[in-house]
Amino acid sequence: MIKRFFQFLVLAFFIWVGYLVVYKSPEQKLMDEAVLSQETKNTFTEGFEKVNSFSDLFKEDWSGWHEIIVQNNSFSVRRPIRYCMINMASCLTSERLGNYIEIEKNIRRRGAQSLKFYAAPFGKKWFGDSRAAIRRQLFDFKKDDDIYFTGWFYFKGPDTDKASELQNLNHSLFLSFRSYNNSLRNFGEPGPALFFNFRNSISLRFDNWLPAIDNAEQDLLERVNTPLNEWVEIKMHLKLSDKPSEGLIEVWMNDKKIIAERAKTLPTPNMVYSILEVGIGSNLNQEESQTMYVDNISVSPTRFND
Image (cartoon, rainbow, N blue to C red):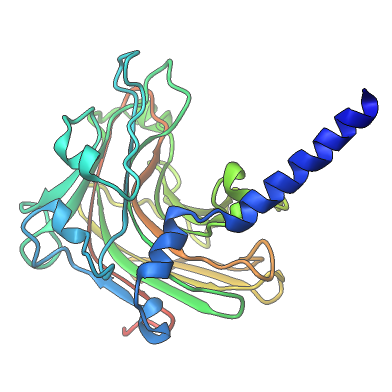
């Protein structure tokens, strides 16, 4: 009996390994089908112009965005979670369950429109994040590469002016680069993530890293309150390395450098950052919804044009 049990374990192990080898994630399928040159793969700009609706951001030639994530507590046992991955038809044609993303024409940084994200409170009985975000895939940032990001964000203030209540508001993830790794997919997608909160300005963390590393927030060079209800320019530079002495993190807010630190920016030497996520990636507030607008974002392997 014991021998058969161990034989079963060995067989199950090889089946699992074989599954990891042949399994293709939605992102990998996109990469197989997309025709993008290496020169354009790591360069992307988006001003949310020349589109009539949110769905126009998702293009058949993969030159736009590739994924929408909407997850919330609908306060109904029948449908507590709503995910929209790759096939967004079910999201765009179904009724809203609280969280949504849409083209915004009144609040914009430049041009005629921007993109609005809304995430409802996740509720006291809810154990996940309330999310409303979009993703651009197909990036190919590897060790020794540089990632330069710039974008304009408008963080709507909460419906309260009480300082004591502001202190109790949780953070919200609004920008991250992610890596999809088959062997780690059950543990999340590792990568650097920028968080916003109403007390401590902008912070950077590294989510879901295996093997585990220090996941503490990066120290701010200067405590600067993030402006609410107005446009804020966020710039980020990452030098990718699995060695703390070679990796670099730099973050600017309205041209004021708030983070500058040598750090390990890749969990492993062969890790590739292939996903950009923008939006409300994590609203953990139980009482307050969150609204954010985004405009004029850019990703490049070369330095910003100041």
